[in-house]
Length: 144
Image (cartoon, rainbow, N blue to C red; front, side, top):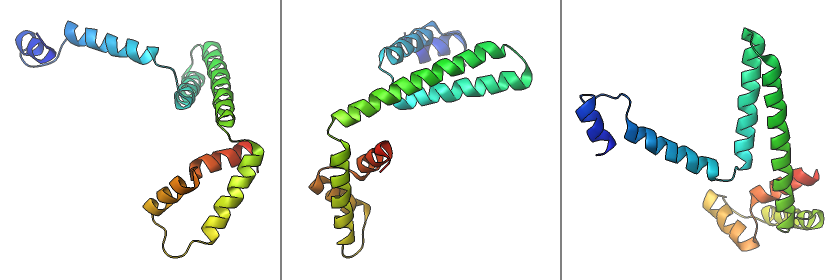
């Protein structure tokens, strides 16, 4: 029996408690929990904790517990950001490489003739071997 058939038989086509759906949702949650978090996930957790703490400050409640959750989320985000930056640097983006690639990118953009479309930039990135987003990230990382 599947979810739709269970609802049709037991809930006359409507939705109510469905053990099949509940089991599927539990499996999906377990699969999501088993996946490693990405940097955006840590930022989302921090934002969620900050919104909860602001709600408690506004409406009353256990502010201390909410503030501890914000502190823990900030620490986790900082650790994840540091690990992500270290992985980025290890992939070949040192300060010297960034300076050289920035000069190469700027020279190629100054010598560009004609209109520039998204597909032209994508082809140019393939040709020179790095993306503009990676270059922006490295420039921001090294404050160049």
